Image (cartoon, rainbow, N blue to C red):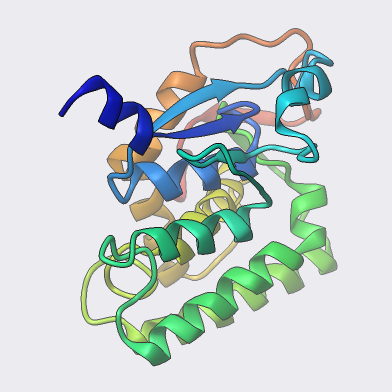
Length: 237
């Protein structure tokens, strides 16, 4: 492959952080897990440089942001997902079965717009596991709804550890949810724990976390006055 063809085919992905940016993780998994060529560009999410670093990506203002090989800028993870699936119909980003595909889109849409209590109370962090986190009624309701959706997806699965059998965009979108469940040792069913284990043990997820661990923070974002145990913690070891 020539240098020109690599340049033409390669996507540019702009992310904010690996340890704390849940949406950046989703964007990266869309490319990494399906073997799509990309370059990663870091944006100063916690340094106050995000607007400056994304100036050339206007009107995008949040991470992740995807720049297509022709220079088109795509913001918002759901739009990125659909764009990549459209451009790579044989890569398997969505399930092949029409009913499973429609359901996967439903799960992704609900994830993108829902679970505000879980997101607000449990920011994604991949450093350690918080012990003794107080689960509010609102967070418990979000967890219960997530389990309903995950169980519904299993109706379409035909083996394998993922929501619809083979890895799909639904798994990319719910990976940070798994990280929250693990990172705060949240109470979920054994089936949900198995899915979270599969997610955090996946090679791509581990590579993402390992690279994020090379960055230190002072102060640490989202610090809480709770005891900690090493990742992945008691329920998920």
